Image 1: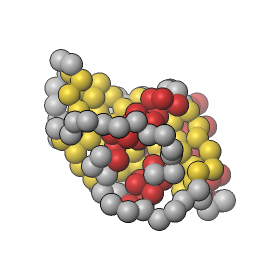
Image 2: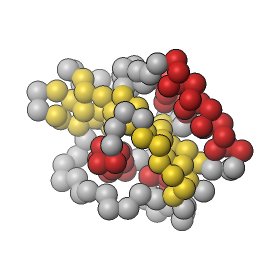
Image 3: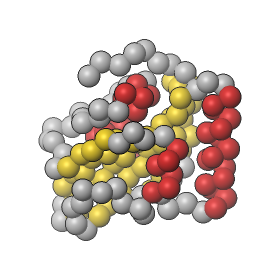
Length: 140
């Protein structure tokens, strides 16, 4: 899939580091069919390569996700708009700070992409509700 040129404005890490953000972005882009998510994630550079394929993937109006074997467990990656925060384990303060940053980005006409991951015991066709919010990508 080809994406329009976007410019990376900033990245706000929440519960991850830059390498975990790049890892999640790489995995999500493998099957991403969500136009905005793909455009925002494609602003990142130096993405590592992935040599396998996910076992499950999905796209909704709000986010894209996929699931990979991770030893005896499964690793779930998701990226999308602020509704993805509903699936993340955050304190009320963290949730409010992130919502404020997202609203502020909207006033500058920036697009955002929330990136999250989770490790699960069983494979599922649904998005987990205990995901870790890795960070938010802002671009213009």
